Length: 388
Image 1 (cartoon, helix red, strand yellow):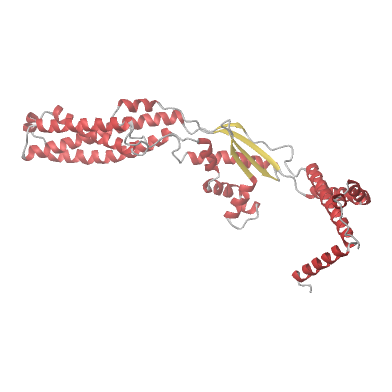
Image 2: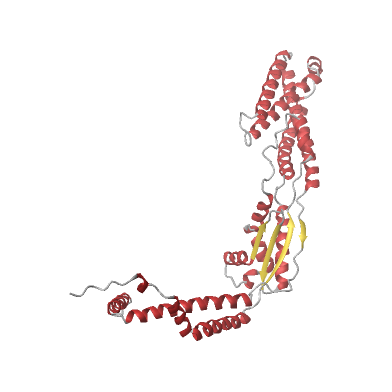
């Protein structure tokens, strides 16, 4: 009785010498093939139009602590009016977002007629092409870098510099810095108070002047009560604005609320001590107090508005260009040597894999069991491809 032959593990292992033999048998293909494909890729790169990249670097507007920030603390009623106008945490990232905005991109598309240059039918396609050709990034050094690529080196430099110019025009229309935000806030409050002050003045003049009123209610007392009411109104605005960036348990918020309670108590006491008036006297006093109330608010807002304007002019949204984009002398791509080398290596690896698989299939075809499996595999592929 014949005993079954048991193959040793060494028989199933692929010998290194066998692999070297396969390489030696196909050495010409493995050497000449990658070289030919690499030379072909190198030749193709000469037909590709070179792309030039122009670079500009600039420092975004720096936000400084304004002089009015300390002045606000001296006016408790107005100290938090512009509280919501806080500084920008990441200014560089915000300016990058500005330059990637549709407003800036559309301005550049119209300025350089990019629809024709990029052969785009719609502006959306031109924006996509612009995003592909321009890279904008902010570095850890605080500088923003703009890399603009194009086949024309002069146009690449113009495009990179145009981004900075369009950003400057956009910033002139936006309130970005803390001083700009405060200026816009107080400007709005000032205009509203001015209108109310004008109406109060006309109402006061229409009421006439009574000597009895002035005797029973001295002007100083009337003005003091009106200013107190204006201070309370400003304090209420302060609390409303502080709720946007502070919790009610914050010390500053508690202090502001305590000050408001004290002012209201003072107002109640002053109103109790005020002599009663009737008829025309009462009408005149009411209009006079209304006038002084709006006049006090107008003075406070005007002072803060002027300080905000001074801070804005001193701070300003000034873009400081570190490196102006110049027409590049050397092309950025295609990198011919790198392309040829990568193509050669990739082709060599693919051919090496091919010869090993081919040799494995040839060896398997000599074995009956493997030949049956290969035939079944070919038949399955044929049916899947619909050839049978």
